[in-house]
Image (spheres, rainbow, N blue to C red):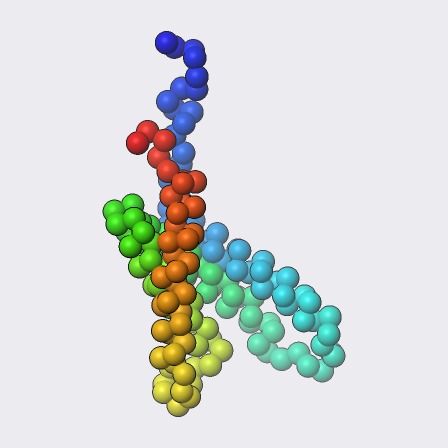
Length: 148
């Protein structure tokens, strides 16, 4: 039955490498932060700028790149373990994001000088365990191998 449908070669989707996920994460987090940042800049007076505003885009892209790379590197867990793997990936990525936030914006939390680190990481882990399967289901469906 040749000619009655798309060829098998047309159905093959490219596999994204880990760094591609990192770039996607970096760009998406940067765009979301840019939108919020532009709204905030409209209400700032000229003397309120500091050095953080110049470095913030790089930090934002870096945090998104780290989280996207982790999601890309760990996606094999999703294939092997299904929803449990998605929950594990979500927890790791959420914890990495919160640790990056603490490292960049409040390093006192990492040294123990300021309380709340445990509660933040517990909240991030729970949030990741909920959102991981939620997003993972969509990624498995969208990036599924059509040959299987």
